[in-house]
Image 1 (cartoon, helix red, strand yellow):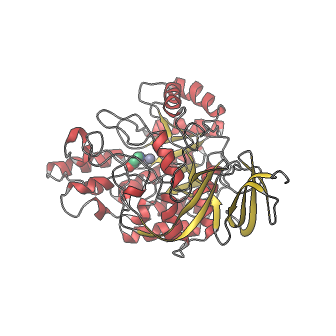
Image 2 (tube, rainbow, N blue to C red):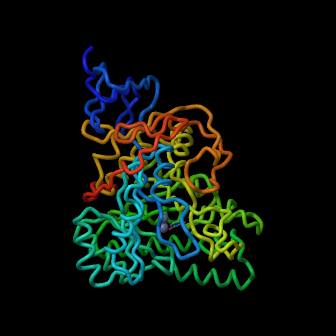
Image 3 (cartoon, helix red, strand yellow):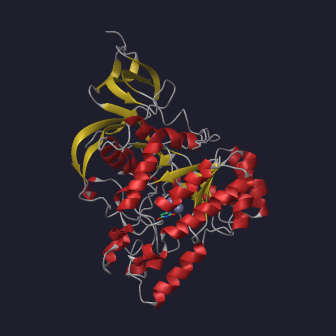
Length: 473
Ligand code: DUC
Ligand code: ZN
Ligand code: ZN
């Protein structure tokens, strides 16, 4: 008997990339895609994908794992459970954040984050930086050195006391991004307006979770989005606006593009599937589960986001997975208490549900093409953060990170998910697709029923410069 030519062959797949859908076998050797074509020689492992769509493994370019929090609050997922959950939902690369604390060096934040990740991950990972204290040392020494070492993107916050930068600081950091070819991600909400609104709500006794949405209306996101665009124009550097939630921010981005500015944009499933009503229609504390920032809006804004996904306004879609247990003193009930909305940890889980939600309701719901799905969930995130073509596509030489899709009826149930959070905001939804198989570097890590751990085999990825092409309209 002749020795198999490949480690794995996936046969007769409907291979989807950001540009094409075609039927092919996929030959895999040493964790990489070796060749595409029909009638390939045998593999040690043979997988029949006839009639099934195969997409690149998802790249979730905005998620929070084991990010240091003020006690007693703690994130429910670190690199082990976070990447387990990612893999079972078809995501094979994650990019969480090494967050600088004010007064801390950026290098210390990176070193600490490596210690948290080392030996834990089931799939590959890279780091973004969060710059919260842009001292002269950070701007002139640490950031340039870290960019050169493969940390080529960083997030800037315009809100949250512990993280926010003033406009002069934003300009300073954007100037470093320009000089060294890095990608700046911006969380755009007006901190002072949020604080002013929050105090008025508190004075009126309006502290239940649902009032979180009233403290952060679209206006505060619109204003900060416009300001971020103006600051990027002043420095003459592209930026990527993260977690865009609805019409008013979208309008600012369209305006910027129409003026020839390179503004990239990200949205998240919560702005397609949740509304402010999920934070509560009365004063029940249950709404704390969906407290995130920016908050989900309404059905009309969901439609605006769908339209922006279909027509190219959005560059990519991420989960913004920020995992806190609901019924826990380290989670949404800090210290075991029902607290005013100001103190509820912000964030919802979503690493595992991002791809199934978008494939089901986007592709099978007829709202976006399969190619657009691949572009938004894998190819563009990999390009934005310098991981393409190793990640984000199906091509010879790329990592063999693949999802074979199953179409049918799948009811979302937290018991079936693999994160360490005690709820999912999407419980009870009936989806039309779920990953039947996830391959990470050519190894089956999820077979539709069972998770196959590869803890510690997830590799740290050094990122190159962004390779996204500007989209002007
Ligand atoms: N908002 C953020 O900016 N980050 C984490 C979670 C959230 O809701
Ligand atoms: Zn944010
Ligand atoms: Zn975030």
